[in-house]
Image 1 (cartoon, helix red, strand yellow):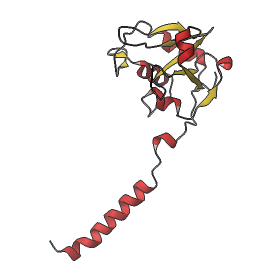
Image 2 (image 1 turned 120 degrees about the horizontal axis):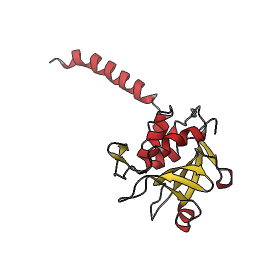
Image 3 (image 1 turned 90 degrees about the vertical axis):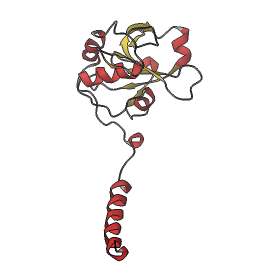
Image 4 (image 1 turned 30 degrees about the horizontal axis):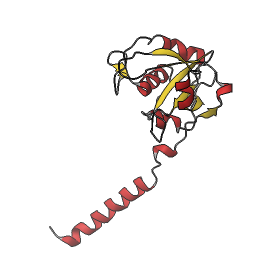
Length: 166
């Protein structure tokens, strides 16, 4: 191989790669402008249909079971919103409108920081009347729980509105 013949090809390849990746945006900096064009109540129809599905670490479907973020992602997909994000922390930082606890509406995503983690590590969907539906830890199944329980109050991180009709 002749080095002088390879140099122009290498330069073109290098410029192409730098141009493509230099213009790329990281996922964490891309906010979600998209909202679901359904109501929170419509979202809950999908969520309630999954009640009793067993918890499975990394699970993303009714047939294999769900973890918390797999459950929420599945419900959002069922209602027309495709997410690149997989973890509850990525969903929390995705750019949806923050919502106070007092302003929660059915369909809002609720986030928690459980244990000594330094980031959000659990997510569920608010159903109304101070309750939310989620896929809990090992040995559990998709169920509804009360946000006013001391455990959930202590772990509360925030909420996000994802349903435009919500």
